[in-house]
Amino acid sequence: MTMRLYETARREIVPFDPGRVVTIYTCGITPYDSAHLGHAATYLTYDILQRRLRDLGHETRCVRNVTDVDDDILRKARSLGVHYLDLAAAEIARFDEQMGALGLLPSYAEPRATSAIPDILGFIGMVLESGHAYQAGGGIYFDVSTFPRFGRLSQLDRAAMLEIAAERGGNVEDPHKKDPLDFVLWQPSLPDEPAWESLWGPGRPGWHIECSALALRELGLTIDLHGGGTDLIFPHHECESAQSEAATGETFVRHWMHAGMVRLDGEKMAKSLGNLVFVGELLTRYEPSVVRLALTAHHYRAGLDWDGGLLDEARARLAAWRRAGSGSAALGEVRACLDDDLDTAGAYGAIDAAARAGGGVSRAAALVGVAL
Image 1 (cartoon, rainbow, N blue to C red):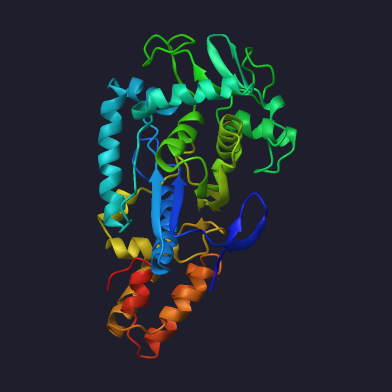
Image 2 (cartoon, rainbow, N blue to C red):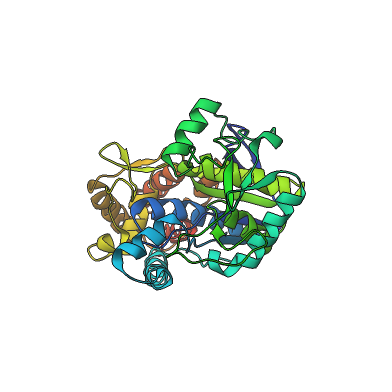
């Protein structure tokens, strides 16, 4: 059976039939605060995807970057009076410990933005040489007017793009831009910010450029699948796709896949809103497998309205699966559900039914990352 997954750019469920080695890129954390449930739910989605792909006989190479230099981490380090890399190191260690506890498969690579400055500078040079960028005000900007496909991924009109860009750090009022939707590839650093030498003067990377440079360095010209939360579709993934294809002339991503948001009281769970439930706090009170089940029992595209009662449901579910014991009951049904746009809700229902019928479900549970 061929796996079928929703493809964001096409807005439909399509066959996902990669080669034996599957290259995956997921946008990682900016390590200036603790990991919250939105992070965990997103990364667990791609963890389950990889487990099924490996079950099908594929090798998966999933790269998850670390944005250890950008406006957010520099602002937080400044407020705490610490070096930004010290802040990053502490948060990365905590994140890795918590994701490991939740049973995430190790990444193929977890490159940091600061490790890739030469790659980023080279990539910016490629964009400039292709005629898709310009220099202004000590920075380098991508010129969206030169790229007719800009907006293809998000399918937003100009007004919507401007509104979202303004909300998500796009600095649409930057006087150096030819067009408010143009985006920064390289920017001058403030006096107290880190700076690297470049042909265009000292500065630091823009938000989007690191992912393009790291994806090219770690996985090559074209990625089989690129993932992240739906909040990254625009501007981050739209800009990433545009600059990558402008630089290389090749398709950047064959399949775009996005996970819905975790919501608390109807609002997206986000650091900027301060409405966070932290993974580390839950792991002090609940077994990791319980947290994992609570965060993955919904369909990944639907997002999740977080409620503490989900943990009680997950704890009862885990206990029932364990009582059922070892065996391969429901394994075929789980495989079919995961092949149907990663339907974890259906997969868990199949395991529940098999457990109630007295069948051992350990192999089915293992396929979704739960060790009984």
